[in-house]
Amino acid sequence: MTLLNKNRIDALLPQWSYKTKKGCYNYIQRKVVFPSFTQASTFLRDMFDQNEKMNHHCKYTSDYTKVKIKMYTHTLKGVTEKDVAFANLVDSALNNYAYEVVKENHSTEKGDT
Image (cartoon, rainbow, N blue to C red; front, side, top):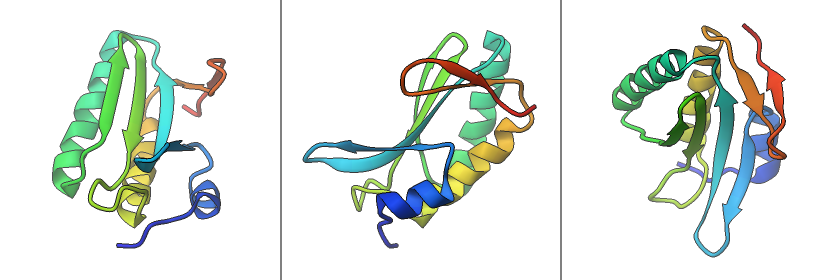
């Protein structure tokens, strides 16, 4: 596996934010808000199943209808092709849900449904 740089990740995953935890690792994240707790929970269950199938596990933070997905390849302490593949899977799964994107300044923008 090869680590990807910010420019490559930005080109491949425009809906994701590239972040650095100083002195530790680089990662990507995406934040979304669902219209209901039920939809957020269903989305998370779907993603958990996909994590198991790919044997690649993300960090999820959920607060009622808000979900944050954070991922990186732990062994390399950065973002690899495996993370990009799973991020694309997340993006595809989101097409089945009504959601809003949470931007870094905490504003929201409606997602495609």
